[in-house]
Image 1 (cartoon, rainbow, N blue to C red):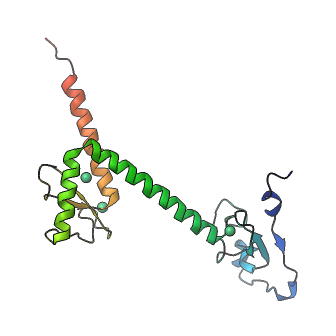
Image 2 (image 1 turned 60 degrees about the horizontal axis):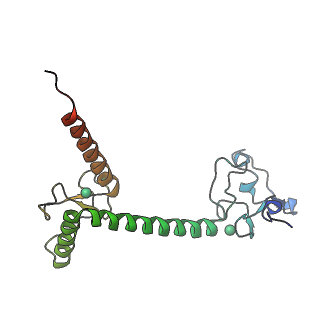
Image 3 (image 1 turned 90 degrees about the horizontal axis):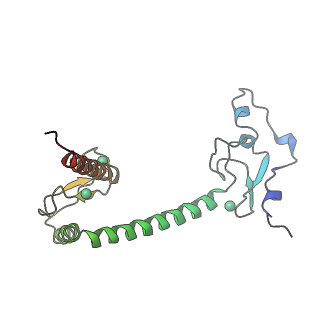
Amino acid sequence: MDTHPVNKNQKSFREPPRALVATPASGRLSMTAPAARGLTFNRCTQCGKSFPASLEYFPSAKEKRDGLSSWCRACHRTNDARYRRIHREARRAHDSKYFADHPEAARAKTIVKRAIGTGRLERPEHCSKCGRSCKPDFHHPDYSRPLDVVALCRRCHKAVHVEAKALRKLRNVLSKEPHDG
Ligand SMILES: [Zn+2]
Ligand SMILES: [Zn+2]
Ligand SMILES: [Zn+2]
């Protein structure tokens, strides 16, 4: 029984028409050879289909001898979509738990959502901190003022919360520190 059918498929195989091969005069092509010369076909270890061993069909992978990923682009796309979906679901689950545990945050979020719906609040197309164009989150410095928000990209938003958490921790430690005398 062959439990690893992909392994025997991993080897590249050569295409015969050598006459069509031009020798690169600059030597530049030889750096990425043989993929760049289109001489070989690689079999994708995921779907088992063969494609010309070139960047057109395989994403680059620096650690590989031919510089090409062992998965074809289509398989990478499918996998990335799957990864994004799982990631999104995990994030949603995390968010709903967070909002269940933090009713004041949930309330503020609902109010923001409503304000966007009515046009009272408009979502900018940039992060107000780093300026990156994105669909920013609305961060609440204070949940008791639900419409007092800061538009932040995901990265800056995360950083703000990490910082706030560290500060809270520090305050906690300081308040518990024993006093002399
Ligand atoms: Zn594939
Ligand atoms: Zn940002
Ligand atoms: Zn926030």
